[in-house]
Image 1 (cartoon, rainbow, N blue to C red):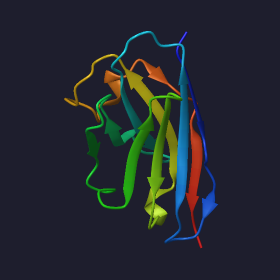
Image 2 (tube, rainbow, N blue to C red):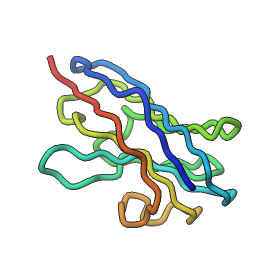
Image 3 (cartoon, rainbow, N blue to C red):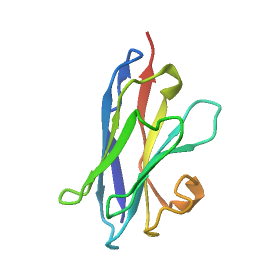
Length: 125
C-alpha cells in the first residue's frame, strides 16, 4: 500500500521560507514521478512542482524561481523548499506520486493515483 506523508506546514509572514517534506513508502515501481500540488479554498487543485526519478524538475509559472523541488532517493523523501512566500501561496499542499516516469502532463491532478493528506501553509502578516 502506497503511503505519502507530508510534514512542514506552518504559518509564516510574507517573504518567509518553509521546507515541506513528503515521506513515501509502499510503492514497488522504481521510477516514480513525484509532485507537489496545492489547493486554496474555493479553487481547484493545482500543480506546483514535479520531479522525475532522475532529477528533472518542473514548476508552475507562479512559483518558478521561488520554490525548489528535490528528493532523497535513499530515504524516499520528497522536498519542497519555498522562499519569498506570498499570501497567494496560502493553501493546503499535497504530495502526489504516479508510476508514469516522464514529465508530460505533470501538473494534471488526474494523472496521480497516490496522494498524501496534505499540510497547511498560511502566509499572512
